[in-house]
Image (tube, rainbow over all chains, first blue to last red):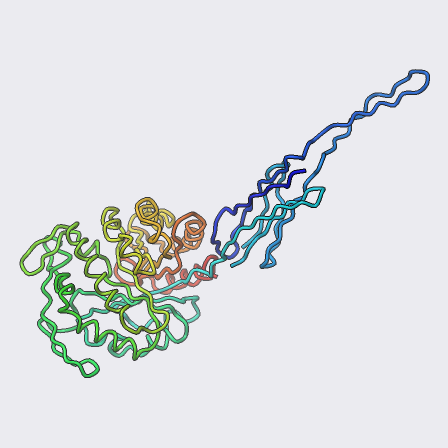
Length: 89
Length: 344
């Protein structure tokens, strides 16, 4: 099993009070695999239900953001590889 | 410095941690200058003014705080950031050599040997020459200023020269020899380096900082006067900002010199915060000064949100091109602007 990877970048290094701050997190784990489980129910007479598809992830990862100044960061988007967070300076 | 930390954890408990540091800057200091180096105390009462510009010639026997200016010390002690423009330009004393004693040491300084601001059809002001400075002939002026500064006891930013580009625009002359604009810039860099080194080699009030003065209206001059070797000795960038056409916007005017600096200067220069020693709106072309002033906070906020050096002080120049007319309306506009982010 591989360890996850993460990089984080802010849209600036210095902010004025009240400025919007944007944090972009790029992350991944080579073990992470999306897959789809397809289920069909059949009875003894050979009748089958329509297929039901369920999405699942092997070795999913979670992203947490903390700030030692107590500033609250809110997730704006996350596509599974890039997550964008927002806070106010 | 605050730090934001990101942790990515997989289902097996393996983690990756990374972090990014950032700074939340203090508010920009709104500032002021009142014509004639006058006491601004009454004008700024009730305004969020926390910065002030003053001008002194090194020829003047009363550099710090200035003749009959104990109020400057009071303002400094009250927390107003003082930008003291020290000029080689000669005023405040009779032309000719000076002899005086500083802390028991006698000095004789020769008459100023340079002319600057050589605009055709005008009388060219005299100044102590860059050659005179480098030869050590003006050390007495520096010693006198330093002694008075120590006695004053309030830290200031010492801005050497008001506007080197204005001083050099039409060339300079020292001891009968003429110098082009570019040559004058190069000589000025040597002279201000000498002066900063002279001061820094001595004990200064804690918190003393240095900069050099430019109008900031000429890109090549700005680049020539800001070599990294000099910027390593300085604490701030500086330029002045005036609106003199109905088409001028605050964002355009404040950003002009910044854009040149970002494109042309080195990393040391660009690490230095910016003092706008003067900004003003000329009423002849922009009768509604108040409306223009109202657009300044957003312009400064926008510029400081971009990459490049941050503007940390903006001192309104209520004199000359910037004269507030009517004054009460202008002061009211400043009051409102300086009560707006990024000034609060």
